[in-house]
Amino acid sequence: MRSHLLNDTTADRYRRSVTEGVERVAAKLATTDRPFTGVTVDALAPRIEQIDLDQPLHDTTAVLDELEEVYLRDAIYFHHPRYLAHLNCPVVIPAVLGEAVLSAVNSSLDTWDQSAGGTLIERKLIDWTNERIGLGPAADGVFTSGGSQSNLQALLLAREEAKPGWAGRENGDDLAKLRIFASEVSHFSVKKSAKLLGLSADSVVSIPVDHDKRMQTVALAHELDRCKRDGFVPMAVVATAGTTDFGSIDPLPEIAELCAQFGTWMHVDAAYGCGLLTSLKNRDRIDGIERADSVTVDYHKSFFQPVSSSAVLVRDASTLRHATYHAEYLNPRRMVQERIPNQVDKSLQTSRRFDALKLWMTLRVMGADGIGELFDEVCDLAEEGWNVLAADPRYDVVVQPSLSTLVFRYIPAAVTDPSEMDRANLYARKAIFASGDAVVAGTKVGGRHYLKFTLLNPETTVDDITAVLDLIAGHAEQYLGDSLDRAS
Ligand SMILES: *Cc1c(COP(=O)(O)O)cnc(C)c1O
Image (cartoon, rainbow, N blue to C red; front, side, top):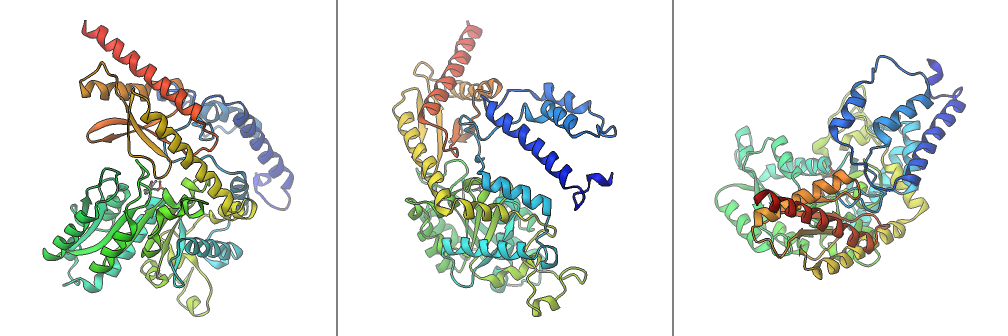
């Protein structure tokens, strides 16, 4: 069994195994003609169920053959131009190379003595990101597993920083006094974080959005004011720079003003909109982000990186101390005096992947402009797609895109019952998924069911968009035809 250990004597096996895997994936990518096969849970589950994990095959080729059956054949392929559903990007090759390197070397970024250069590379990428945001000379941050974790950590820091202004803070019950303000279309991880942080069930105050799905700052000002008057503590405002559903960007400068006025922590959730940090022409859409106390970025959404690759950034490095605990075996306090960089001092995780390497490889091979160019392309595509939808009488389309998302609904002229339209749209989404011809997402707007394209693939064309719209209309019409038959 030692021949399976990756070391000085097994270079050949390593090379052969990985190459064989790479060849399979390359062949797969070259031959997938649809983003999905449409396989059902019922069809796939028994194939996985019947495999006996206590009966190994002892042969890489055989295992890859088996993998074809249980995974590769029926996976969802984000590189396909008709995958239009969630915030999943096609990945760039330098990042995939980084992934192969980082898992083989397997550095763990909790301490210097488990990573050495890896720690310095991560720190440099944090500085690079902070420079792009404009967070100032005292900024810092750390890579995380994703936007949800970044939001959680940012809100942990905000909670701890709110304490000085927090009357009777010795009393644990006072957590109930803290309030977080986020728009009604902010990410659900804000509420989940509030729960994990021990805040009360009604701690997250939902601020209404305007027609463009941007936080209404008049309403925010009103709620902040009311919070203070009622004796509560405005712990944080979460501004979303790129909402998950609409790509809308909250008015950051106005929100920054209000945060300054009320002494409230400003967190910008730019999990999606961070792509604009490299944009060659739309960077100004996130102006005001430089005034944040903390920022969430998901490189695995708009920097074309494989999952996971994310970071939480802070204006004031010293606030990261709220996540610092010392263990004698790992990161004893004296190491701080010895100036040994242990990233675990800043992180919620202990063992931690060297995800930063993927972004490093990407920047070194393609450059930031290369990423920005790709992200600009999908934003342009979304604008063209919006024009197509706006001109198509079969569809109702909401909010002109600030990023690369389109939300729309099939509205046949002959149907006046909105519930029937809901069912037709839901049916169309399911039917198209089952066909595997395309994958689209859905959401609710004003209580009604809508469909959603999240465009993150520069290979997707306007023709793909129009073709998928025709497919959706076809499925919806089929549903409505069938339901007429049922009624008669
Ligand atoms: C995707 C997303 C998140 C969560 O990020 P994960 O990386 O999936 O954990 C948070 N906020 C927004 C606005 C998002 O779009």
